[in-house]
Image (cartoon, rainbow, N blue to C red; front, top):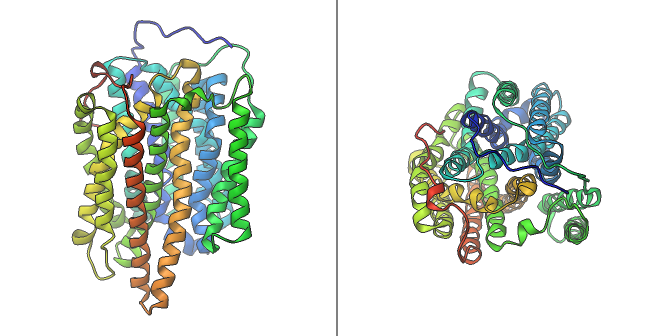
Length: 486
């Protein structure tokens, strides 16, 4: 397999417009993992969804997305990153229309799954395009800072936008709004993005694809079944089957000529640590934001609009802190930031564990969200740069896919585990004679405690796996996040 020639020395004059398009894509992908969270209470009533179906509206998206990302990355590498981007964006828009017009829970869940399928093609193509458009230098640091900030704030922006659309239009517009993003993305790609791909006799790793896709699906479904008990035969069977299939995937990748995931991508200790940290951040973001919305709307009685706006405290804290993190990175290095950031965020999550049924947003929620946002900023700036540092042109799509896949699968598994914790806490509170609001609040508090523990795990991973010199983000490659990023 031969690799296409290096990019010309003269930078593409359209590269900053291309960055805008690519950042928009990342916003859409991350935003759609949370935008329906605000709308779920209304959607559940209108479509008569069960609590299990309600969770699958989210799980269907992140499961399809995470399970197919590695294949999407290889398709982008071989078929063409710009082409893959455009097909992914078009399909994502059409699936969003179907979801917005859904008349039943089944339709909505299937549409969300299709969104995830096309996002799995779209996201790695976008990140790979970023990697080859900004291959080195100070501009690469700026590009990754912008991209990382968008990734870090996208979840909260989704909550705010979902609140606005649900309040003033209808919950369906949380899906239909993607039509606008799709049109802008397609036009932007046509005008500003250059094609790139790996040339040569490229073959797809069919058996590896089947093993990793079925393995991840079985693992996530097993965690979902754990709501009924960790010792149930179905739960154990799916979890064990998922682990066996993932082990088979590793065995296959070590033996095929053109693997779906070249193991050289994950053999680097620091890069593997970055992927694990990305998974923990995904678990925290997707799990925490869902139960935060439930607390704000169901217990505190905020409208969808006010609940969405209330979540912006975390977003603004991340935006304000991101330039500071970008300045500190070349001085302190990624290990310090990626160890301290999760610990700061964990302190914010511990703050949120003290919520009460009679409390208020300003005294019990606001401060915690600000602290979480500050901590997250110190992670999102370096994590993707560490994960992609030193990756060759031929592996850009696969590595980019793994970055996204780690976050989505982490979020999917995290949501399943957090839901199990939530249900257990609610049942214990109800059995003790607590009222409905008190039981729900104790369930949300238990989830926030679990996310704090998850963040401490991320800090331990960073402290132990990011040792030694790294060829990532030397001083000349870093730049402050532009003030207009959001």
